[in-house]
Length: 315
Image 1: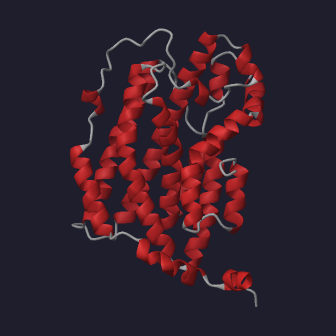
Image 2 (image 1 turned 60 degrees about the vertical axis):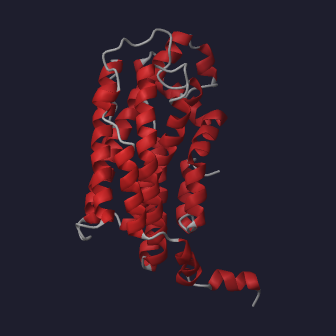
Image 3 (image 1 turned 90 degrees about the horizontal axis):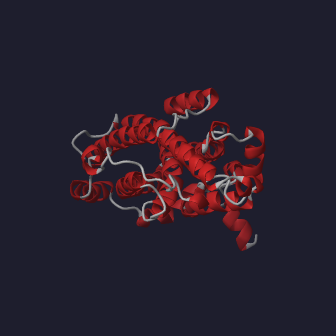
């Protein structure tokens, strides 16, 4: 038997056992994150100037990250219409963020339900839930301040998430957490230093980036641990469920109603976004750090990998 064939037949448990040495002690990680939270947490109501006037001629999202950027339709739009689309897309992403964070909070509560209540791991989860409460309120206030409507996900995706919250495995929950956090985090890291963007939006994204860095660390360490210790069926289910979540997330990323609300033909706009090489590159660049990590720990395999490819997030 060749060495390649041998490698293919080694059970997951044996392949992943070597990764045990890479795992950080759960309590040690949590203590460090708690210390960071104590030093670098924000109250958006006090930190940001919500009463300052919005600035004329500024974007609400970097133009390169707006879904229609560099399409034929984009080139026909006036700068004012492009900036208005950025306002609606910022509201759409904030709406998506609230939906996602409410899901995340419920998944975290489920995760710690059977854990020792005095552990640092549980205390950090509760700290993260408190962060997410503030973030959701911050995003809601941003939507109101911009004057844009809220953009809820479709009824289908809303109800699919209801099922996810009920049946998700622990590794599946953390894989979905990273999916929702890391792509937006990549975009926000480009947004908060961008002086073309409204000061309020930059402030919101700065707070979110600083606090989400801890959430990503917590989820990565726990998912790495779970992909080593979980039973085979749970790892396989995580691969498929995360791939399906990636497909749904990519479809829900921008609500198509934004195009109608700035006077564009919705079908034409959706078709051009789907055909846009620039948009595909943006989404794959945003997901690359995540997909590299998921590949490293064994999530991107089999049917799950095919679903990730179909989502457009995996090159």
